[in-house]
Each structure stands twice: as C-alpha cells, then as structure tokens.
Image (cartoon, rainbow, N blue to C red; front, side):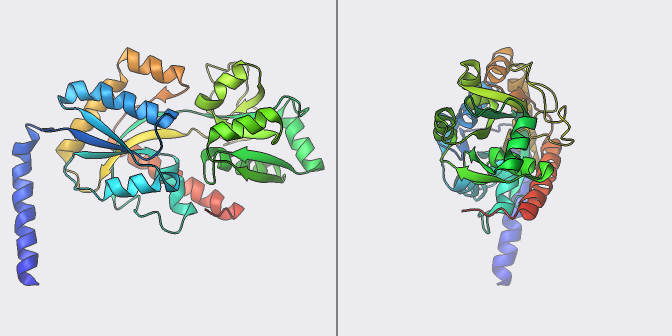
Length: 321
C-alpha cells in the first residue's frame, strides 16, 4: 500500500514538474469535445461553431463527439472521467450542469468535484407561446383561463428549462397546469400548432421560425430584456413576474484537475473565437447572445443556477424519469 502511495505521489510530482514544459507546446494533438446531445440541435450547432473557430488559434483541431442520453448526463459523465490533461472538453448546458443534479438520483458526476469550468459561450431565452386557436392573447388570459380550468403545457422533456419555466409560472401565478413531456422540441411544436397542447415555453432558437410564420402566438419572453428578434413581445418581469428570468446557457468544461495553463489557454482561444464577427453574427441569428468571460465566472454561474433550480424542483415536487 505504501509503495503504491509513494509511487502515485512521485508520478504526480513528475507530472506537475513536467507540465510547464508541456504548456509551451499545448495543445500538441487534437482536443476532443463531447457534446452530450444528438447532432443538429442548437446546442450541437453552437458547440461545433466554437470548436471550429477556436481550432485555428489552438493550432489543433477540436474533434466533436456526440454522446447523447439521460438528458445529457451520459456524455457529460464520460467526458469528466477522461484523463485531466487538457485534451477532453464537454459542452455544458443549464440541464446537464445545473438542473440534472437535483432531478436525478445519480447522474454519474459531481458538479463541484468532477468539473473544471472553462468558459460560458452564450445564452438564449424561452418564449411563452400558445396555440393560435386557444383564445389566449396575453399572459393574463392564460392565467385567468388556467384558474377556471386546468390546462396542459408541453415541454421538450422532464427537467428541460421549458418544463421548469412552466412550473415557475404555476408557482408564481398560483395556477394548475398538467405537464405533457415530449422527446424534444420538434414533436412538442407540432402538437402546439395542431392544438393538442395549448401552451409551450420553448427556447427561442427552435420556436422563433414558427412565431415568424404566424403558426403560434408569442405572449412573453423570459430574458432580462426583450428579444431583438421579438421586440414587441414583453418580458415576464415587465408583466409583473419579478425574478422570472430564465436564460438557457451553453458552456465548456473539463475534467477536474486539468492543469491551470491548459484551462487558461482554452479560455483565451474560445474568448477570441466569440469575438469573431462571423461567430457572433451566427449565434445572434440563432437567438443566442454570445458571452465569454473567465472560468471563475462560469463556476459562479453553475453554482447559482444549481441552487436556484434545486429549490424549485424541491418545492414543486418534480421527479426525473
């Protein structure tokens, strides 16, 4: 036992001593980015966009590996168990890096022990939308109707930000609505348009085209300010729901123990990528506001978001599947 302990200690000291030398050439080979959702969605698109933009500055490609499952927990857990050498990253979201830890008994990783924050990429908002034939033309109409007779609301899955947005509305307005979870936004939007469900708090990037086409009606947005894409739609706070701010976000993290020089190198590369006009324009067009900043700022965001959603999940008695 003692031999193994001292051998491990010696290896750690050698690795630590060698890192300043390695840092001068980092990264020396491709970096893997695990995106814990299927290809094609807004999370995947923004992850790939930043990976491509940062690769040039790093001098090495960032290779995307989509590993979906368990609301993002499968891919996140696999990435955080990889060697902490700066060559594995994982894309975080409000779900996988804030909500899931309170929703499920075992997600396979600890947000605060297994993860090293790298950078906040950006954030979108949710839009409260209703079926055109529902007769609901304002949030007040929705609340009044729900008080007369409970109605259903859609989500893209248990624990999604659009699920918790509706639960927050229920709590703040004192109304009842029945949750109808779907496997993604696509099927939920189809049923919203068709009238099978009257209400859906969807992410702006996925619901915006249907609002613009007049297929659904937007009642409010969950951002701190109005959306540039929907300037005539009020925020929930404007309508009297103080603190009703939900901005689903995307970030990159690494396994805990990743050397600080690697974290800083990656943070700088991604910050520079986020400042590229083409990258910013693409993100804004998707309904995502570019962010950036330090690893420490992302760490504070993860902790505050975890605390906030853990309380709502507890109060509302929400259970993961």
